[in-house]
Image (tube, rainbow, N blue to C red; front, side, top):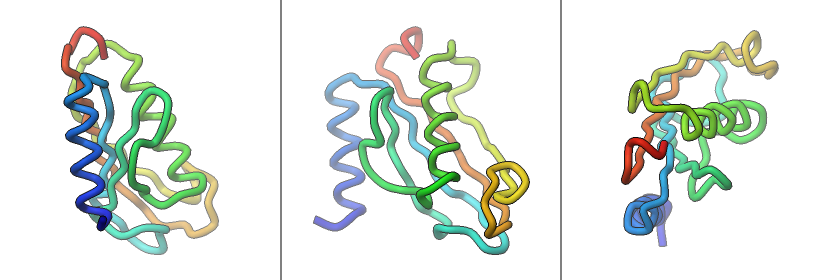
Length: 111
């Protein structure tokens, strides 16, 4: 199964199970970055269900933010974050990335 099919199969399974999750998408990249624009991952409260947005420190920072969004009361269903990989994340590649975090929950009050 290719990665796109696996992504959508996992997304459908999470929705069918009623499990809240966050879709993290790399929407912009400038300079040296560890992944291509369009990279996605689905994050639940306990795991990365599928995908990668670059691995290492940037992925750990995105994972932390996604899990925080799952715990907080929903003020917004989407969030854009810009990170300088060197200054904000501590990576040596030094590029800039923009991530879109989209929170999905079958019951908005539970996210």
